[in-house]
Length: 88
Image (cartoon, rainbow, N blue to C red; front, side):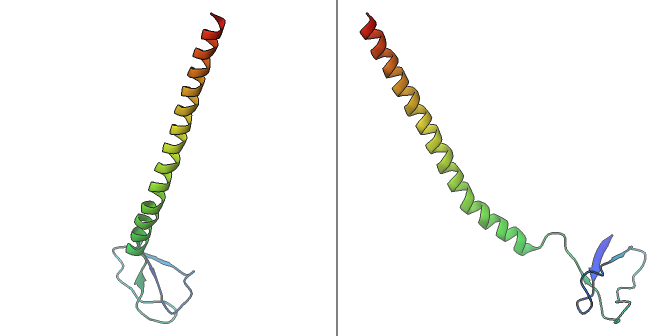
């Protein structure tokens, strides 16, 4: 089933038509109904643009967190080795 709306009447009054019925005119004003698409091409393009800006930021944040964790582990290993040398 497709969703249609009248561009001149209220958008809240959407009409759902069966494939059997081909009466594609508004009941109120008689104008031809326009089809409502689930996903518009502009929405797809905007999602691609948003992800292209967010993905590098996410990669940068995760790599910096990983680098800090590695540095912390290295410093802890050095402290442990220093403590072992002092105890001997």
